[in-house]
Picture (cartoon, rainbow, N blue to C red):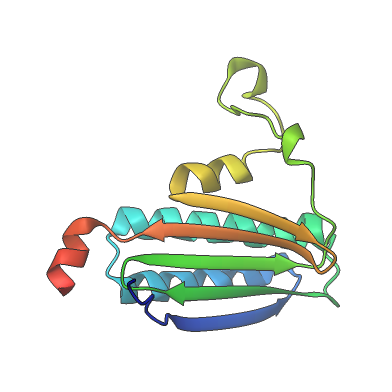
Length: 150
């Protein structure tokens, strides 16, 4: 049995205000730099984290700035995990549009955030419970970077 390394953890708690998503973005960029991610991977993580934060602010907390949403970055040797949590009740994942790029959905006003997260990350999971909604994003470190650090 191999021991799972203890990750470095960075936590944020921010008021549910869209203009504060830039703080979340700055932290994501700094974490990606620390992980040694290339520019494309950093952009993918940044977009995904911003989308998760936007969903927490707009849908989870209905832009109520008196409510904070939380973000936690866990840096493992082989991956980055980002957890974004809000106190909202969640959503019905079965009602998501499976392909927002299909012709009948190209001009939809909403519904691209989760698609973007799933396209940019290696794993995207949601948990809904009495404490609210949690989105877990996982981005694996490229094998070449893992080898360079070994």
